[in-house]
Amino acid sequence: MPIKSFRGQIASTAIDTISLHTNDGSIGYRIVKLQCVTNQPSAYDVEGIFKIYKIPQTVASITADINFSDPTLLACSYNTFGNQPYEVTNVTTIFDGEIFNQDIDITYVDNGGNTRPMNYYIELEQVRLDLSENTVATLKDIRNIATP
Image 1 (cartoon, rainbow, N blue to C red):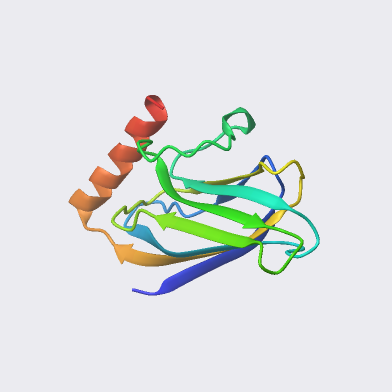
Image 2 (cartoon, rainbow, N blue to C red):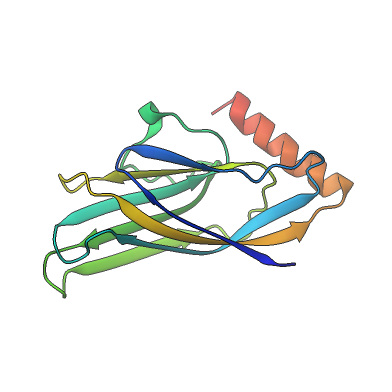
């Protein structure tokens, strides 16, 4: 199946939603690539935490905490950028077995004392779902929304 890519810039303590749902839920997605870079990599010190969730988020839920036990977390990226070229750290984790068929929410927080925005690039592999896979993916999302 084809790869769909999304890119954008997100402000600190903000949420972006990528609309992926379909009327019948027959198309699923899997994250295959996630890259982040601040808007001015060598100008400021940045400690950014970028996360992708499979259920809607609220501004109150945006934190710098990363919890791999959270079943709604699909991917995260921890990025530090300093004002010197040698001050760069990127750690990205993608839970690549996870297939979802609903919208995803992206959150970002700059934990380094600045409020610089972060650029992101995401690639999603499309996966055709049969009726039973569609039902399982949708029910998992509904369950996670009902009991966060």
